[in-house]
Every structure is written in C-alpha cells, then in structure tokens.
Amino acid sequence: MGDAAALDEMVAPIVGPIVSWARGESDILALAIVGSWARGAARNDSDIDLILLVREPEDFRGEDWPGEIAWREGRVTQWHDADYGVAWSRHLQFSDSREIEFTFCRPSWADTDPVDSGTAEVVSGGCRVLLDKSGLLEKLLSAVS
Image (cartoon, rainbow, N blue to C red; front, side, top):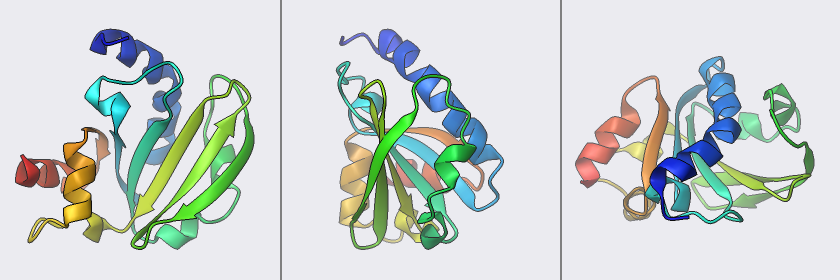
C-alpha cells in the first residue's frame, strides 16, 4: 500500500464529506489531514488524523456535529475525547472499524512567529491541506519547510 494514488482513492470518499461539512461551518477556518495518510504511508487499518483550526474549539465538544456530516459509508458506533493542552480531539469509531480523529485547535496553533515545536512536529510528519479559508495552514507549511 505504498502507492500514494491508491491511498488517495481510499481516503477521498471518507474525507470528502468532512470537507463539504467544514466548508459550510463559519467557525472552521482550516482543515488538514496529517500523519500517515498525508505522508502516503498509511495502511488499510490506519486511522485518519485531521487538524481543524476553529475560532472556539470548545464549541465542538457537543455531540451533535458528527451527525451533520453526510457519511457515505458506515456509521459512528462509539467515540471518546482526548485533551492535548492547547488542542483536544474526538476519536470516532465506525461500524466498519475505521477510526477518524478530529483535533480542534485555535487559529494560534498555526502561528509562525515563532512556530510552536509541537505544531512543527505534527506538520513535518505529513500534512495535506484540505481547506484553508484564511491561508493559515499554507503560511504555516511555508514556515516549516
């Protein structure tokens, strides 16, 4: 599974509805896929890691927003949250065993003067911008490269 084109074909049907949902949410400023899927090194069982830059991360702590996404395949069977200091994540588990991690951060997560070492580590480990309404992620990628 090292072929990047094959990986894109596998992940596009899953990520496409998320991008469509994020476009319609005024509080979501940017969305990127990070980690193994962004690097082209994912396996069939790799989770999908997403970074979302949002005005107020706590606004997404509610349980309703995953139901607003027009999932094409599977359904959410369980979820749990994790806190990472300046960010927090919701891990969604699907009926087909797939897992998606949504990490919500303030726009300051992408600050470039200076770039936070944790942010630089995430971005350097693979980052593909899916939506960037304000150019924050593109600026960050330029600063890190």
